[in-house]
Image (cartoon, rainbow over all chains, first blue to last red; front, side, top):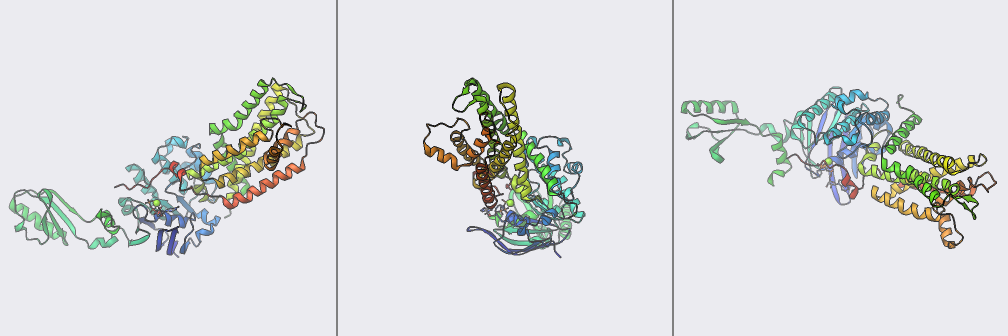
Length: 299
Length: 275
Ligand SMILES: Nc1ncnc2c1ncn2[C@@H]1O[C@H](COP(=O)(O)OP(=O)(O)OP(=O)(O)O)[C@@H](O)[C@H]1O
Ligand SMILES: [Mg+2]
């Protein structure tokens, strides 16, 4: 049985149709990422699953529960990190984790959680003295304090410095390796690429693509791009089909067989006695595919 | 689940936490505990703690219980309404709503905490009255005074939750509680002893609202010329009716999500794309 089953889910706020009929399923132990531009409907979707919002239509089953029923037993098994939230400024980090932990039947040890999110130095500091990223780490700790089976993370690493982001990724990976299921939203392509088993891209209330980060938007079948700068030689003798000359004399080659074509190019360069400055071989990134899918690259 | 803490244990934790939040918010602690005390001391100094002929009591004997009620109402009504509304603005209520904590335990924690804070300010007020201004307390009326206090604080806690349910933001909660409590305090005998010169309609208005039904029986219990045991059943029933009505309405109308209006400015905005 899937942990999350969403069918034909729709949500309108008055005449704003935030979610317009989406389907997806998440299996146990999966890390599932929702991507999409601002206002795509990610938070709306996640908050319906959390039980914070009522859906307009469609069916939703999470851990076998209907979140709108707001069962206490359901809330004991989920952990939530909201996109916009706060913790009582007057408390210390330790006090907040203690108090929120007390609400769950099985909760993780406060000291261990503080260590996991790297706030040891701030254990007794008042929350009002924490930096934005430190607060976000505390919110992550509060999201998993109840040792949940399913964790909702709405943009969990926004505001993190690069090393904190890496740490958060490790935390999420460790949770998944314990068999926990994670539903994540993010604006960071590298985060989705690194963490997610599957990704769904939302735009304007619909899922426009879904798959593994590698396969998304048919990315595997896209051509590899080889570029370099070679001064004072003509590429006519190269004998490759898809060659063009870009800005500053940069040569751009699209290739279906990059290994063979690279061999041809380097052989050609050696025999012509030129140096291939700034040689690079790239495949379209998740971000390129994302921008194409969400139509944001036209702007 | 079997390891679930009992609601009583959870309530205990919630009360401790609400107390902590209160005492670490200096402005709330000031207006609830210190401010009424200051008014009491100033009144006693300004009026020289003289004997008030019409009432048969000294200034301090009159104002100590009156200002104690004012402090108790600040601790319950004003404090619960504003803190709850501000916590909603910040998204704290929404966070609580996502945990397994039952809403009744969370609200119960706020009310029990208000009762304790109110009790503390009443004890400080009466204590200073007794020590420095010759205020007297009578064993005969003490049980009635305590029950009146509990029912009064319970009712004003429920009213505080109702205000939090009705207003959109913390700022509006502050405005509404001040705009209701201060005028009522003037006409209900909290800041001024009741006067025979006041128009009848003013007294009618005061009688409709619950404050007078709290301060009058409580003050009577400290009136040296009064000979009964202090049980004012009519006022207590009337207070309870307000309390129950407020609880029912607050439960129906309560909102946990920040309003999408001005209050949301206070929350940190995160919806920025990295590119
Ligand atoms: N409470 C609300 N009332 C009215 N409209 C809302 C409400 N919440 C969201 N919306 C609208 O619904 C749409 C989807 O919003 P949502 O917050 O789900 O987007 P998102 O994908 O999470 O965006 P972001 O990346 O900016 O967080 C937006 O047009 C938003 O303005
Ligand atoms: Mg969002």
